[in-house]
Length: 353
Image (cartoon, rainbow, N blue to C red; front, side, top):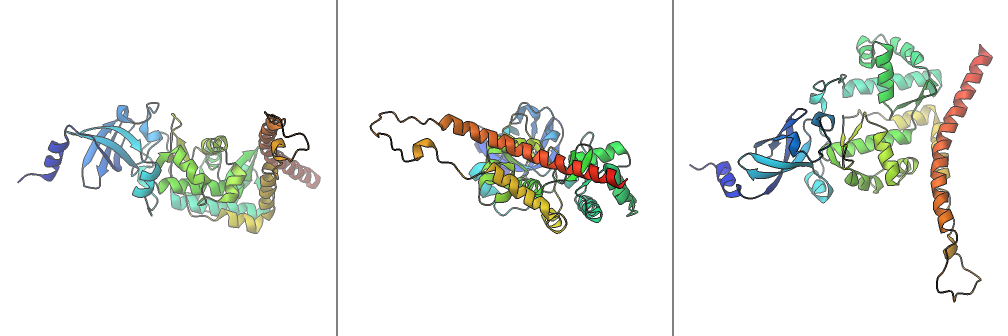
């Protein structure tokens, strides 16, 4: 009796067939893809789409979906993420990819647990709420954590100051280090990170930056978060690169993947309940970044003669420069607001000492 797989390979040995499957084994230089029809295909680093990648574990996880060209006779090439309309078709109504089983297999990996992460978020934010301050020292945070007498939680965050510092620095979607203090992050940043990460994990774990950017600009994405981060491509790329704990931007700047599953934690609700003024500050930044549009000169009815063959837009260049200045001013405003509040906190501290 003829094996159907052997027949298919015989018929396609001289043809290219585009297929896709899930990563079942992954190392720095090799991988194995398992297809829906229960076939296995191995590939090497040289077959990978981004030739600047020298360790595939830095940008991929087990259970990620990749497509490839099947030449028959076990020969495959052109290993690449799925993106565009093809991605929308294949992953319609998909759940998030589970990345948990891959942790600990990479060099210098620290243990990561979605459940422990959620518990840590709750405990840390509760400490800010208890002290009624959006800005704390790392030591104050750790002192508060020790009060819970949870050794497992303390080990998860870190048993040394260096590890604790690394923990806080990596969770840039929740916390931010400024002027030696650990501040609560803007909830718009948290919302943007979690929504983009979830999108990636619901699209096979990895896709093109262009596809993710199109989602970012769509009505599906939180408009408030987008307006706060900025809608230009440069804002988007800077944002992805600012959160390497969550996103892995490929060296070739064409693809991006999600590094881990994030816990379910309603951080905006915590801010709304405990520090509502941060939401007001977010809105001020958005209004500063997106002021009412000033009509360009050629859009204003002119009293001059309309017989000119070449209308001159005398303010076009200034308008372009003005937009760039507003973008820079908005970013400076975020930092200055933070710095001003830190100075007030320090002044209060010295008055009470």
